[in-house]
Length: 472
Length: 58
Image 1 (cartoon, rainbow over the protein chains, first blue to last red):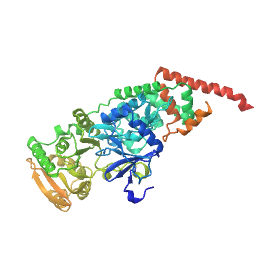
Image 2 (cartoon, rainbow over the protein chains, first blue to last red):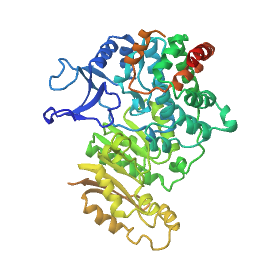
Image 3 (cartoon, each protein chain N blue to C red):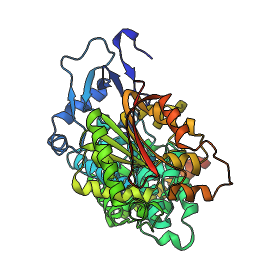
Image 4 (spheres, each protein chain N blue to C red):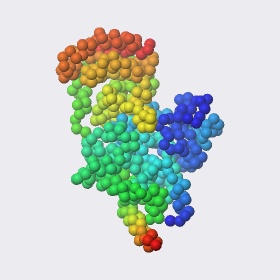
């Protein structure tokens, strides 16, 4: 890194692709350093009405320039950004989240184009979340639009936003594995193979997939600067750029995905909880969260978000992780419609959490490196990991404890082997495979990892809740 | 294309490779007027090729 250690600056490993500006962290602040040209772009942007409107409607993350410019950094200007409570990646979003992120990106671009600006790129990673509300974070992406030039970010928009939406809406395939596997998204050539035959007639496919792929092949030998000049000479105008954005917006709005019934989407209704059990559980979680008063709470196996909502009464923000994309999507839509800005729902399998990705595996941070929380809820998940996925019980607890900051609370539910749900899971495994899956073993493992400050047996008698202060 | 235009295009190169084909296809998704622009672009390329040919051979 180019900075002496005394500056206390830490470069964000996910921000290096645009050499003109880069995000840094210092003393809990999120800063963005700008070179001369980016500083000029920023000052023009800061003086514009459209940007002021986007800030006022909170569609773009809060940003201000530091005056005077700090002298200990090699930048022409330094911006300070509002902190986003939890950085998530597009492959952790549900369909509705990716769709709303795409619509926000297009709306920001439309407003920019109308005011003579544009965005340099079109990545899904330009969007983050305040709870269930998307926010455009890449303020360094704005620059003055040049007459007669199409949007430079269109290809990236297709690869990281539009194509994943098409894959899910038209083919019914979950898009998350595609984005998780490739940091730059799905290439047009791969999409053409997925959308052969009659599928080419589905909305948006012929132009944005097939024509796009064919044009790429045919123009591979021409540089983008040559093509820009040719388009300008042929009369490409800002009105056409706006028309393209309108067309894309209309297409994204038309794309709908109706998931079939999944196992989990009915879980709250069909699961073994009696009303007294549920009430006792809610009461326990509420009391534990009130006693902890967490900054961040993490709800693992959040399902319909019942306990994430209880945590949100006492936490600054809650990250609600659930494995089933359809369940997360239903939760997201409910939270969005309520205008909830403190609960972020995410799609992730706890037995296969997001790894580090991109350059050196740190450009997109692994879940374990982002998710440490003051309070962790692990309700009705331990048996799924220990029995359903064969993860050794001590390792399940190690992972839960690792996610909890020292002095924080872990609220964990142990489902006894006699419980109907546990029996169902055990019935699919050979007899005697889990001799250690017992309450006494679980309790001694807990005691070795923290101080058990609360415990309650649910009225049904086959489930026990614990509150553990980790490292305390 | 003028020499001046060429220079401006070079100094304004974005950090992102927008993709040549991705730029042209955007004209087409912009509706009828956009298709006309794309057609004009291809027409000019065609004409330019025929005009260039005698020089290339000579």
